[in-house]
Length: 143
Length: 133
Image (cartoon, rainbow over all chains, first blue to last red; front, side):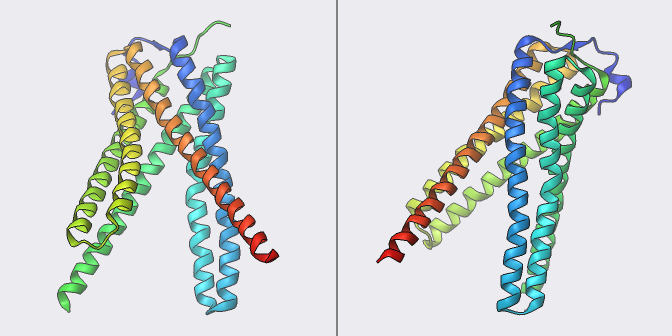
């Protein structure tokens, strides 16, 4: 792992014009994806409301409430990576425009948080799949 | 304007963290692709799937996943190398691959949104036509 002590011993890496171009392009797409993500999260909230209400009116109320909670939790889980991704795009744009070192730090921290969050979510999902598989195997073996 | 943005130790720490997670995400995507291929083979052997449709969808999703994963893996590789050796060329290459990864993701979303809008329009037109008859 890199820490400040280790990395400060390296000579300074500067961001040249070509890298700046790459960062600017990245920022554009990150903001676009962020906005799309916000719209998707909003649509998830709306879907939660409508599908929950429909389910409640047609079937048992408990199923509808479960559906609302499921979709709302899904929307909240998506909100953080979308937010960090959008902030990364916005931060890089500002950093490149004003040569702002602090803004570059914050933008890359947001990218790091986004990657970390997605990775942890993948681990959580894989663990859940693993547990489900084990439970299914045990159930199948006991029948 | 003078270009004075540097990779400070704090930024290097952030990039180092993204390197780890990017590699992990890329490997996970490769494993996922392998499992999808295995599923395709098992399905084909059992003979309970529409071969043409399934193979076509596997090829499309496989190529997209492969391109994205390779770019993510290359970002991880070059970013790590630039951090280890202080190499600006590798930093450029790392950012180039991350940019490509973002572009592929963005274009993919654009295609999905366009298709969604197209389907909605077709559904509206079909509903109007059905109502007029």
